[in-house]
Image (cartoon, rainbow, N blue to C red; front, side, top):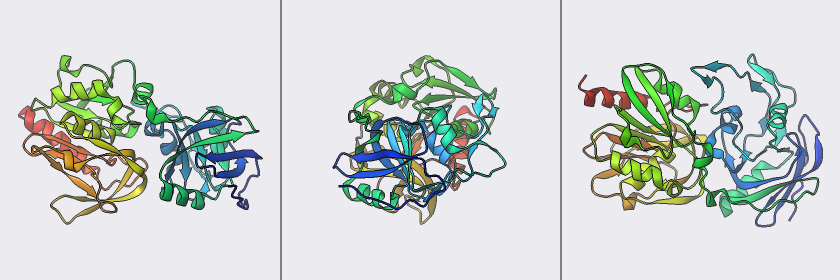
Length: 371
């Protein structure tokens, strides 16, 4: 089945490119990125802004990203300035997605911080991009059928189907060596499963030293005042080494905070189970509610798996729930200083409703340190 959508964008581009879904549907469009074929898992993001942050989020590793907001590219791509040995305006040092699907592409960009167009950036990192796609129809298909595999076919060059969930994606985005950020009073071990740069920036707002370690690092050999488990791509059950080390860490009374994949890994380490969502939560406008309180927050999210609340043991309980579908948005230990969020309180790029959770974590660290 081929869906033709009239193209109203600002750039015609090459038209010998199409998106093919595993259900047989085809979406022809125009190339505005690197001219090559690619395959991955097709997911959609409902954010209106923040494409530089989304495209460099390691949690999108192995995925073809669909932007539901119709106009993309109008503010270009920011400079590659560094601060604290991190790129200041990006979430990692390179684009994580396998391809980018949009409706209308603006080749003419305007922003005080822009140094190049979105198309130039994609081409520089060899990432294909398709415009002229009816992303409303495509999103409806994904919402009805669920996340599915897809292929970007350029100039008739076929590629094999690729299911990223069959691989340990975390091993591909996690660093190989230990790295230290800051020089503060409290030592925080950050298990990097594909961390977003803004998480490190938020932690460095406090009097701490961040010690970033690989996902399979034996943290039992480290001395630390707090443990942080980052976001990351793929199936959490692939990270069995992380789960093993984390299970041992949860036997101590040292504060632990997990975000996104980190929440799922904490659940697995506690003996609970996770499952794959139909199409995941990927947007800047997901409402969540804190359990036991009549208070709602708007959050930024990017994940395809969730914790099964029904499998939590008697020592753990849900901390947040999603208002839309009642899925788990975080867990906490009933007696010990362990908690997690499925959403992103660092929220790059936005909203920042739940950034206070970093304060809560550091408050626990100082409390259990005796300060």
